[in-house]
Length: 71
Image (cartoon, rainbow, N blue to C red):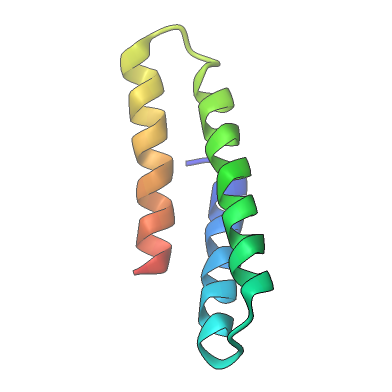
């Protein structure tokens, strides 16, 4: 997994925990924008390989990291 993805996941999880005690729509919008940017980032990085199987494995690995931080 890419180190930027790990940092994003930890930061986004922190924002999600803040939302519980500080309900504000700005936090939700900020997290949604970050999520879209990270999705683009993962897709762009995965295109570094010409093999579609490696691209898929890269994406799965990074999304799994994000989910494991949230859970």
